[in-house]
Image: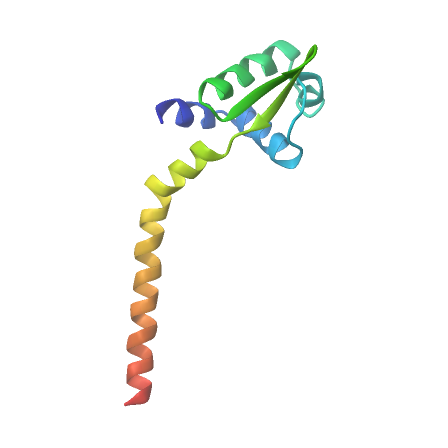
Length: 105
């Protein structure tokens, strides 16, 4: 999970993930058109995203297509965000229940 957090810490890598979210399965050249970065810099960022398993690369002939893998982000949500959200939802449910009880009395 440390690799995922490291990969997400950089704004350029988050922009690459956003581009793949909008249009999955892009080549390096296609991804470069959206960023003000050299091809080499984009390639290095993609390597970090791939190492963190946030991007999956599929070769088709001479082309490499990059695909977003949202599973690690889902794991972060479950471990770090979802558990806090559940407590808030439960608290709202309890508040609603108590207010309904008071209105019925």
